[in-house]
Length: 271
Image 1 (cartoon, helix red, strand yellow):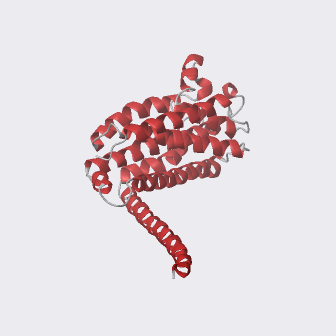
Image 2 (cartoon, helix red, strand yellow; image 1 turned 90 degrees about the vertical axis):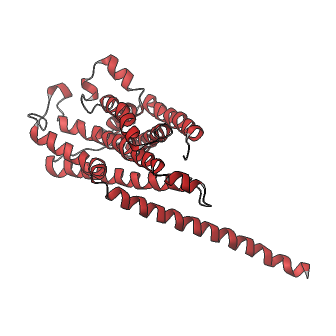
Image 3 (cartoon, rainbow, N blue to C red; image 1 turned 120 degrees about the horizontal axis):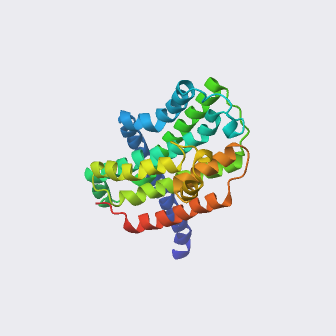
């Protein structure tokens, strides 16, 4: 009897594990759908994550004199061409430090994180859902900005595609890690708005949103190189013109992911 019973226990255990994986996948998918609905219902957050990058490109290119004309200070390139990769960095910073940070703080303030921590479902699935929704919004926002630049201003470039993708992924991961770290210290959505702003606006300056990298003073640019969004912006700009990103910028991004991620994992609390 024992010999005949053994073969039946193996598929039973395998089926049980497969069933748990399917259940986990379905619960995570439901969380993603729920978080996506909440994201869409926040018009201000949705606007800044999805629409604002493209709107900024169109406004700057249309309203600022000479922004769509070749500039001798930029080697004959148009400022709008230089600004597109900076816009990608802007989108990364906005999604991480405004949307992701604000959503996590709001979930903690409402007790959602605490309730999830007491259920059989691992709370980390909420983080997966949040990152999935915000990453999707980031991709849509960047795609709209690139599409607007191409259709309206006829921007034609030949970027270093692998370098551009690598810079984009590392930049998004480093800023998301920073957002998770800041979320450990933000018990309310109001606190998230305050802390996020203190970090967000200097980061935008380092990324060249106010002053493009080539126009920055050398000392300021060197400092910006060692910030996550500044390094991401410079790496995106290098890849945008067909070059491989500088090793320094990639190393800074990897270090930020490792450092911020480790601290976030250690300090993050569900309540």
